[in-house]
Length: 165
Image (cartoon, rainbow, N blue to C red; front, side, top):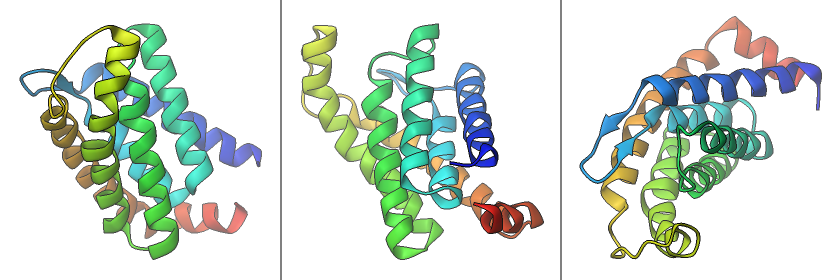
């Protein structure tokens, strides 16, 4: 990986961590942190699958270590990041990256969170307990991410970035 790509990845992690500190939406049972999902979509479109998953994992880990996220931050961000980047890689369509993020986080990660929370957090919840918060967060974040990524794709910076990566 180039220094430039690693620098961009670090900046996206910093934005996601800072954004989760300042931007959250109460959804009843949990708080939604849409900035992470926006960063997942942006990085999926600009950087590809491996950097996107790395950004999501490092962000989740930092949020857990700093107390701004629970252990649910890992499946809540990594699964959506993986699906967003894979759908964009094979389709080339920004809106499908957003759809991949919503399906990956809102549906799959919320279902994975049930046994995950039972094993690691000692909680017993119903199958669809996490889904409303995960869907709310991922829809808001993915929409924001698609809008920002489409704007960035048209910029001179993105063209230079794509030619050097």
